[in-house]
Length: 323
Ligand code: ACO
Image (cartoon, rainbow, N blue to C red):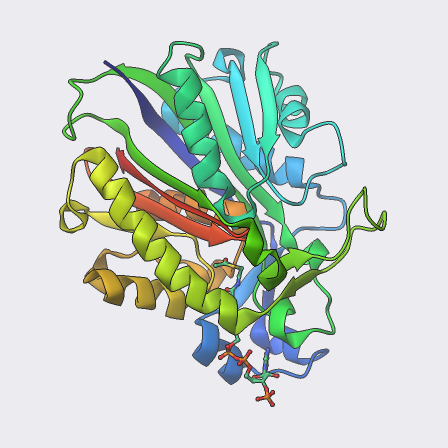
């Protein structure tokens, strides 16, 4: 059978770093509070002239290089983002133009922090059916542009960045020893919208809006929902959670990462965490963490990884992948 194989991974973080101490200069917070409640030490912020497509292009270039591919090979681009350059066209088509990719398929996915898992699943539908031979799946965000900088309960949590993977078809035997995407669990529950949303939009008030969140409620939902999705995505791949080499969670809060690991009996040493340096980069956080784990030599070819996320919607999901 044809599997969708991840052949290259790349990440990009904008140059400017904002530490917790930097934030404490204009909002009533402290480095101690932020680190204790979230594990976050700093976040990156895009320059005023950097659009989310610029971040996406940088990450995509690195992923293509890692895969030994060029923009000319790309026939499908999916960008998961909640902070697009423009209301339309899709960021994916802007990335296509900036990279110089040929005419192909390009569109965005909006599932907030779960966007990358949703986008990978969507790409699998094209690649495994022979409709794409070289796909770019990108998570890219400028979350700092959605912040209400007077709301200390949210503005300390988020950052900007982008991560990308190249997905190509590969022969598999149809079992969990195959390289590639092996199992998914995708979920949404629209009744929980009020826990986490942006209070602006094209067809409501015509504003960009600001991110609003009931943090403690989101926290509880995250641990329960993510744990269920991880178990389901492992089962979908025909493996046990204990078989996984590396867990690559959406990087929202170190306490959520620890809570999920504890609930599932996962050794915390198997969890890739970038939340201290990146904060929450929404759809970008999983591919950024994957890129970091590969770059520092922890994640190696052939290993089994499990990606998971939850975000606004609520949406959540998980994906089992052999590199
Ligand atoms: N600095 C100092 N004090 C703060 C700050 C801050 N940045 N933010 C809130 N506080 C205060 C509150 O005002 C409150 O004060 P009070 O007791 O005088 O009223 C106190 O701290 C406790 O507030 P809580 O909201 O109950 O604090 P909690 O321990 O729940 O931590 C946090 C808040 C960090 C937001 C936590 O709920 C959380 O991380 N939730 C998950 C949300 C999340 O990560 N969302 C991201 C998107 S969804 C996702 O990606 C999974």
